[in-house]
Amino acid sequence: MNTPAGINGAKPLNAIILQFDAYTGQLFNKSRVPGMAVAVVKDDSVIYLRCFGVKNLTTREPIGPDTRFQLASISKTFTSASIASMVGRGELSLDDRVVSLYPGFRLSDPWVSEHVTIRDLLMHRTGLPPYAGDELQDIGYNRQEIISKLRLVPLMGDYRSSYAYSNIGITSAAEAAAKKTGMSWEDLVSDRVIGPAGMKNTSARFADFENAADRVDTYSMMNGTPVAGPLLNDDVNSPAGGVSSTINDMTRYAWLQLNDGSIDGKQIIDAAAIKETHRPQNIMKTTNTSIIAYDLGWETVAENGRLRVEHGGDLTSGVSTYITLYPEEKMAIVVLTNGFPGGHILKKAVINGWDDLYFTGAVQKDWYSEIEAGVAAAMKPGASAAGPLEPLPLAPAGAKPSRPAPAYQGSYSQDYYGTLRVEPDSGGLLLYAGHLTEPFFLVPYDGDTFREKGTGTAVKFTTGSNGTVTGVHVVMFDRPWVKADFVRTAS
Picture 1 (cartoon, rainbow, N blue to C red):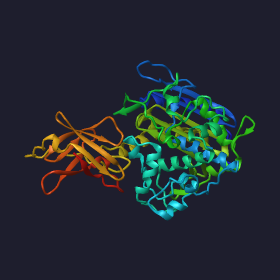
Picture 2: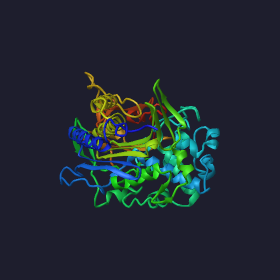
Picture 3: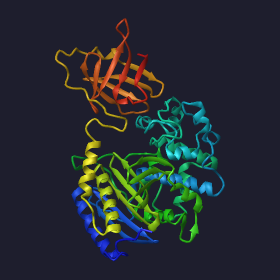
């Protein structure tokens, strides 16, 4: 078993904690993230818990141990825990076929559709493209609508021999399991995990977070400056990203996971079932010195002779979180923040610093600068999870005028995205996509090409032989597996 620096005699644990506290405070001040909460648990004790900064930059209310944060993708571990509870009770097998539980679930390949299991979905190995379905959530589709449209998504990876992160895949697994119980997933995870673990300020419903008396606001960070924005309602993909909690509650959750489903002397999830969620099952990356694998709602990292089980979460609205378990040490660290991308840099630097201090007695490198450089490279202008979005250059010399607005007005249809509407607006056009009630603004660029103001990308109308507008290509909706060409259906 790995032993901490303190046990080796290099430095006692209380000294490590004091050094970690100073290190973490310095990182927090450097980050300009509005607020953060950090806890370390070991052997059923909280050995470190500190709250930094404020919930809201206007009111300046300080964050406390019962202040709620959105957890983002840490929510995936709650889904696997609730499913593990069902497995332990004999209500479900991880290898049950999804269609046997949720007949409406279909993928584009009929054979794969019939064979996909709960395990496949929790491991991201169905062959679905990465993040497929998220773009439908962005334009207002509900959970069932998005799942029903997966049959239109080509499988870009090999079934059971590929990896591609899928929020809607996790949500589909949760929906299938919930149907077995007759409960909603939100009720299921409360009944099987949140309630029994004594997590009194944790919920899988956005309204419970939004209406909580003690919660953070969230901040997107522009060039290091926090900018308050609307809270992100992730109820559509709640099993993948919609749980909210507090640092106090998350210490209890860490104990539950470390103690193989037991807390306060009660076995609330079968030990073998919860251990299975921590087992490496889908290799994501290997190097000469490390292996990273996806488990069931968790990731396992094996490096430096040590094993970590962990998961992070990010929402561009201003959320960045992380939980790391050290099973051999009976130890975990949790970091919750209300800023992005600054919170992403901060949380990783905090966790890496704890790892260094605990196992070696000293922080080994400037983690903040290294992670900051990586984030900057990943977030270059025009980059997105779906690939680069190429903004239009300045309008060309001699750009042609657009047609009168009524020439473009009407409804346009595409199988995957559904219907969008185009309406006249002073100075351009309004584009309403999916179920959105707020439009995208299009300004004339060159002839039948318009520029979407938010992304700067092209919206290109096409015409028939008689010169009338027959369709539109919306570049910002393009994905590697779908070209966003819409056919005009009505004027």
